[in-house]
Length: 197
Image (cartoon, rainbow, N blue to C red; front, side, top):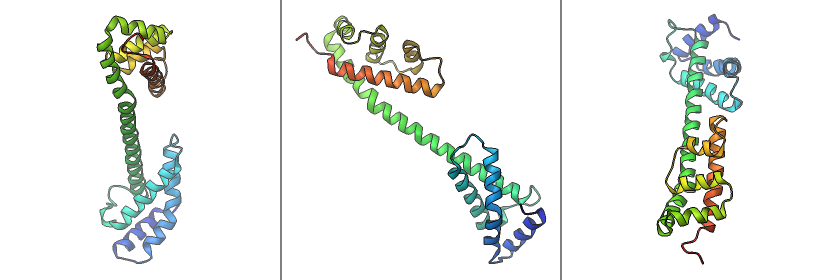
């Protein structure tokens, strides 16, 4: 790990346009910077994300060394703060992408079948729907969930209570509810009929 004096000197060389300073800084800083960020984020198993964040932080600094204010903190601390910020942004971006995919999947696998089932339920009448559901779904919990789907219920927590999986962590609950709803949807799509033939 370079000393504070080294960091101060390399920064001045960068400000003065020294052509070898950039490569020298990158060579000396990337490894200890990556180690610092890995140690600060033990829950993150994808070290590739951390390496990318550290590389981006160093490249951003090298492109604008004048943005660094030596009166506020040491250069290594500045680079660590920048890398941590880049890492948080990358994780947020991944989380937003997963949320969008989850919503798109829910629309594709849940809303469209539910609308078809609702139309069929209107044609059959509620009593006949309940009779047919009981015939194709022997489990009382599945019957209750099926009527909730047809009625347009959206709340995951309500389905979780019906399926008895509401004591797990949020992601496990969402997966369990989606799995059960998809199974029920597919059964109803195949088995419900507009008449008794």
